[in-house]
Length: 393
Ligand code: FAD
Ligand code: DHB
Image 1 (spheres, rainbow, N blue to C red):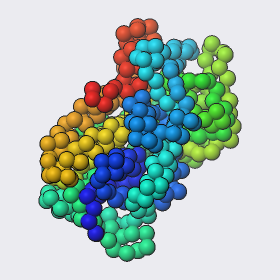
Image 2 (tube, rainbow, N blue to C red):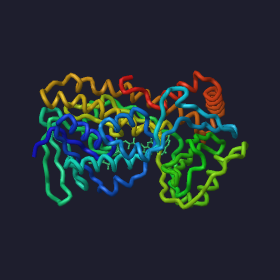
Image 3 (cartoon, helix red, strand yellow):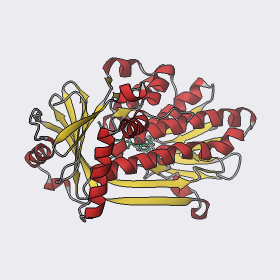
Image 4 (tube, protein in one colour):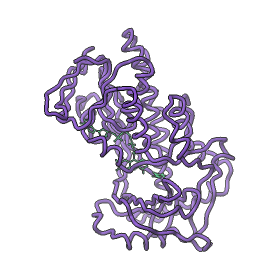
């Protein structure tokens, strides 16, 4: 069959792109290897930048976000045993909203189902062909085991870091930038009310810890751990003991509430970018093109910014073969991508402890934290990046 745009992957990038194209009157088909239940339950990011929230609201998929999302006007940096509040809204006039990524995915899938837009789950064997022609194709096996082929005007590779799209591009057509960090995050979802109204990013001699939340009843927590450490090393009581060590400060008015652990997993940390984010009629978006370490809360927000640009570029390409915005798609996205790469690296290195123990670097990171906590100029720079630069920045 034919469609105008073939979209690989039903994460935030693929689903939002499909919906934006629908609003432009363009047909798309989304192909996803996992089941609907799986993608709706997968626990990942939680911080939506203001531009992300505004876009979702504008296109009519923000109702539940508005109802259940938790607006935040500040965050805490905790180090030297004390809290230093970054007053995001006072400094920037903007805010962030805590709302789970999988809730956005649920809302987007519901919007697709409501309008009868095609999302095919549980497909396998996805392969991309003829990318350097004007009629690229996708072959795959559908959930019923039938061999299928989609002929398109363009393909959007929204299939995350481990997808098939990026590896379908000839190696010599891409330049790769890759940086690994000597630590990973252990993420925990717990059934217990948040212990503080705002997010707390903690630098501690035992390592980084983050207190976040999903709802008035659910707390989300992260701990810096060694990369490659098996999750079996982290029984629940060890997790709570370690979180207490790192989060409970000398100022003593903070007590960490514990509760049943609902989910836990370990995520490696890396920075990764490919340039350009396009090969012929294949356009990469989101984690398929770039990864940031999670400390800046930028991953999902970057995916949203990419597909906003991509929908605008594909509409004229598909309608009247006007490739102007398609030509500039990669450069437009990479400006924001590299800003987020820098901010994420900055937050990560400032707040984590290098297990190799470079004491010079440790002193620099602490000095930077103290500067951010005491200078309005430095705090404003952090806040401006955290709440999200305007899409047209
Ligand atoms: P994804 O959400 O990865 O979606 C890609 C989709 O493509 C998936 O549904 C996948 O199943 C599908 N797919 C893969 N291969 C194929 C194929 N061959 N064919 C068809 N479909 C395919 N960011 C934060 O800010 N904070 C966090 O705490 C955080 N935690 C994370 C934890 C993990 C384990 C991961 C992997 C990422 C995390 N991120 C976090 C990053 C954030 O979740 C991502 O940046 C965001 O999901 C990017 O959206 P995406 O749509 O580009 O990719
Ligand atoms: C969350 C994740 C992040 O990476 C972050 O920087 C802040 C919050 C979260 O999952 O709530």
